[in-house]
Amino acid sequence: MSGPTPGSLDGGSLKALVDVDRGVVSREIFVSEAIYRQELERVFARAWLFLGHESQIPRPGDYLVSSMGEESVIVCRDASARIRVFLNSCRHRGMKVCRYDEGHTVEFQCPYHGWSYGTDGALVGVPFAKDAYGAQLDRSRWGLIEVAQMKNYKGTIWATWDRSAPSFEGYLGGYKLYLDLLLDAWDGREGGTEVIGGTHKWLIPCNWKFPAENFSGDRYHGVSHRSVDMVGIGPSGKGRRDMGERNQARWLDVSFPDLGHSMIAFLRPHDAPLAPAYQDAPIVADYFRHCEEERKRRRGAEWRLFGGPGTMFPNTSPLARQPRTIAAWHPRGPHQTEAWRWYLVDADAPAEVKDFLRQYYIRYSGPSGLTEQDDMENWNYAHAASRGTIARQYPYNYEMGLGRATSAFEDHGLKLPGVINDVTEANASEHNQRGFYTRWRQLMEAESWGEIATP
Image 1 (cartoon, helix red, strand yellow):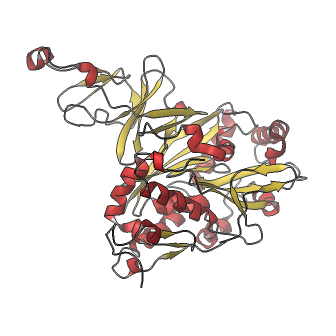
Image 2: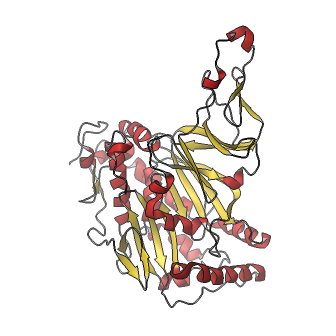
Image 3: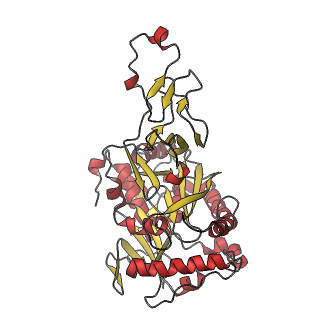
């Protein structure tokens, strides 16, 4: 038996808990209350976090309620259509000033004592203000608390509580190429997506890091999805559209260990033909054929690159293939995760294409689909089996693929950023998970962003 004393941060250093050089990670980081509290302070209070999509709040006064760690936040458009992000907590006694998931308003009124705030966060109403406070209440000092930095990136909304955090572009780094695989239109144009079907939300009885690391690049758990593979689920019900090209593709585990981001990428052969279009619906088939042709024309050598799943550190997982989604793994204590998932389509796609994809998304993914349940069952049982006094003394093994990565990948003129493990022959590795925990340990050890190396 080895490892730190359960429940104690000083029973062993963070390096003893997470030794990425040896590929060993303590179960303690998944089940310890003390470690979880430190994560909220040093990871979620510092990192750039995904909140939603601008298509969910198209007009001034539109809002949605999102989450940053355990903090509830309001994402809204003010009267000038500017997107703002505020802590969802009244400055008087802390009550939530917005208790609905989404909607439209001219102001947010606290249901406890009636303080009200404009969509720009300003305190605009105080009941009995003259009699209760006289001239002593300076309303300019008591508006809603706004995030330190906010970024609208190709329609996706991100924010951080830390003013000293790197810019969003700096935080993203070379991962931009892989995030763009999701956010750019399928025909190769920059941006142009929208959310379809709202936000799906459900609870999982496991630590948030289980889904985050799984989506970072776990291709080793194919046995879990055997039933889905046997059914052959796909847009046509006869198998996945990309299966044939995937079998011919070069699989890559891509990690940015000094940023924590990762992506499973697959690269078509340089002389690959255009993928076959769906045959069941002529309008859908024509649209995807057009997208394939335009993508090849617009993107040059990058047209061969597809990606997903992956994880943008700490808790956002883009999937740039089918289903085309973004997931966020919100921490709700060390033993529970609230999963949120958004589904994307091209905003200018024909209505028939959007409906076609909506039907596929329902069948494949999310709480009502056929794959998410497989994963959740794994995380549920793994977490429960790691909480015991004996279990916590034995670490997890992350040795797969150690020493096989390269930072200089090129294929027929296409150079890719990141530290890459070519797993086409090896089938799988834990290269991406080790990168995730490298960054996790950096943030957990550092007192501030000034101590954290940023490329």
